[in-house]
Image (cartoon, rainbow, N blue to C red; front, side):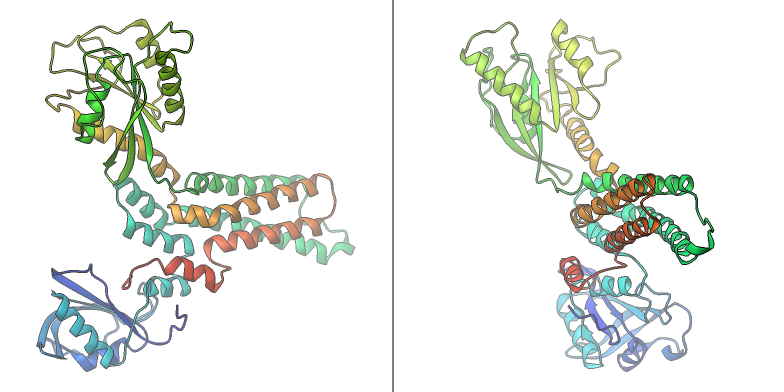
Length: 456
């Protein structure tokens, strides 16, 4: 990837394919002169005299085979743009051949084609955003659910960057006081007491570990989630699995204990990929190594691996004592109570409990159940406030930074010398700098920005 920012780049910034409108984006010092060579506005104002952001209607001219192309020009001529360079967007008809011809015309006038993510890279190099926010831009582009989009937007707004900036500022202030004391060590002047130093080091460590906890949940992106259907025999688990997945994945029978092994099927909910698992009905008082006992053991193993369990009860009969106990044990993030067979005569015994009423025959309540499953599974993503790529990249740096600050507290407690504390804080500062991009290498930038699409 090119890190030369003194030329002018251009790319198609709208999605591929035909549309009512297409967008061409330019950034660089020669934006105005390039536009003056190929754009004519409906008004008489000269682009070179523009000092404020402007929206100008006009035409691109000289475009091969198309002649004049009507468009709207959005122009930022100062460093207040996204890239802190003169920047422009040309909004015109979203015909792919026409956009390609416009792109060629602009390149003929002096621009070059942008590389993947180069606009966002220029924003980062100009200090407009840090690396965590650059990754959030990619998170917004790639979001496949409301939860993922909310997480990316939170990070883009500075959710992670603000916390890390505060920690870095605190460590820099501490280093200034420590190193001032080292400069005047022979003057017997105490710039900061051991007690005050411990308090501030503890605060910096707690903040760093808080961010580390946030990224830890995103350090390993999930390929899918496991949702296990559980309950007594013959309450309609297999029928519910078939109805949710719109497949005949499980055998359905009125005979108790039809399901002895677990059955799985795939389900996509609002961008989240789930594996639905139908398990054998739980029967109490079994002993030995009968097939029923083995089936119970398999069920318990599946529940232990579950991200979410759907505890199914038959709405045509009253709850058993075991079912009542199990419902009380369910936690909000690990289980949902699902009443089946509501198309038949139902018993009203769920006062005080949140229950999702469903019917595998009439499909009543299935959309509500799908929405509740998606909400439950995505709650950890929203709560983390960190996109997956940031979690993977930053986890080790944050761990090392927290370890360095913790070590400096031990040095302070044992009075081993402020120079050792300063050395640990320098190391922590370097690791935090890697996270936000104060310290970076070309390899890191290539790894991040090469995943962007061209035009972003």
